[in-house]
Structure formats: structure tokens, C-alpha cells
Image 1 (spheres, rainbow, N blue to C red):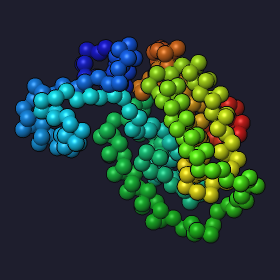
Image 2 (tube, helix red, strand yellow):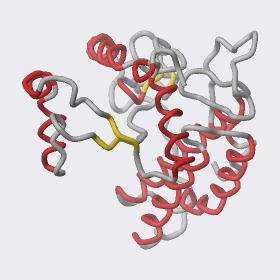
Image 3 (cartoon, rainbow, N blue to C red):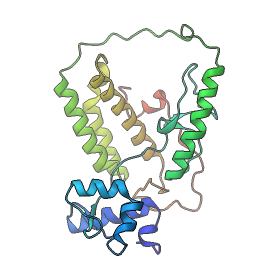
Image 4 (cartoon, rainbow, N blue to C red):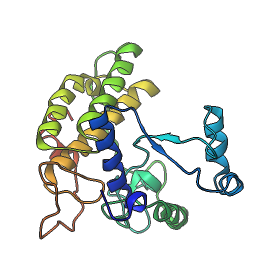
Length: 258
């Protein structure tokens, strides 16, 4: 798959694992570190060693089952260099924010450094702000219907996770994205219900975030970094250098309920 084997970029390794699992109809592949000394493994990876032991896997002598997982986000709320957003009084930092320091992949040490630098900057900006809680635009609440039973929200979350993983996950295409968008419309009733509970609010947020991800993936007709389109498997000769900027208005082309 790559001359650097397991040391290849994480998106390359992820697609390789996914491919092996798909063709072999496997739940996982295995990582073998038994060639390393037990003492080194326990000292260098104490948490991994302890966690694996809880599941009956001794990494000093057993192969470790591994599979791809979604555990970080690229993109987010567009901010300036001090975490400020287009909404006065709202700052964003961490994985919620798109500061512009990441490219088509998110590297672990970059994320840690970003958290330290922008966490400090946002704190300084908020401390200097003269905006009072009473200031800002007052927005009236829309007239909404009665909340739905918790079971309906939980079902939407389950189905949304499955659809996003299967259609908007490691390998994407116009076909898979279009299928996901079509399925999304059947859950849009959530946006018409009042967010009167944590479950209702989380479900609404999941739908909005997933819509933004699908729209961005559909627009970017190239493969670059962790974004891989099997119908556009390369970045071409002129890859786009820009981030895709989305607003509620621009999302309504495919998601009319937003």
C-alpha cells in the first residue's frame, strides 16, 4: 500500500486496513509488536498495555486487534487568530474551531500545540472584551411543535451514525454522499422540534454537523489528506488550496430544512 508500510500517513494506513477488512470480511486486522522487549512496551505504552490487558490481550505476547475509528475532526467554526467568530461574543477553540493551521490532515502534535496556543489566545481575547452579556442581537424563538419521545431521538442518532460511517466515512463517492443526503431528509423532523432536552439538542447538532460534512465532501471533487473520493482518487494537477466555507444559507441547497 505504501513504501513506509505502517509508518505511512494515517489516512493511507486507514484505507489499507479498511481494504483488508472489506475483502477478507473481517472485523479487524492485527498489530504485532511482540518483537519488542516487554519492558520497553510496558514503559513506553503503559495505558495501551493496561487497557488491552482488561480485554484479555497481552501486547507483549499477543497480536492487537485494530480497526479504523472516527476520533478527531477537521474543520469546524471559522475563527480568526484569537478564536473570534462572525458572531459577536462567540469564540471557538480546539476541535470545535477551524483556525486555519491544519491542512487536509490533522496531526496529533499539531492538535496539542493548537490547543495550547489558541486556548491562551482565546482566554486573552475574552479577558480584553468589553462586550457585556446583555449586548448582542436578540433572536426570537421560532414556533415549534411539541418535543418527540426520547426513543425517536435515540433511533435517529443510531441511524445517522451508521449512515455517516458507511457513506461519508473513510471512502466516499458522489453516489454514497447522495444516498446519505437523501436519507438525512427523513430525519429533518428533528429540526422542527424544540430543543428542550440535552438529547434533543445533541440530535439537532449531529444533524447540522453531518449536513456540513456531506456538503463539503460533495463539493470537493478530489482526494486529499483524510478526504478520499473513490470517483476522484487523486488531487489532480491543481488541488484546491482553500477551505470550504459553509453557512446555513449555503447548506439549504441540499438540506432545505436547515
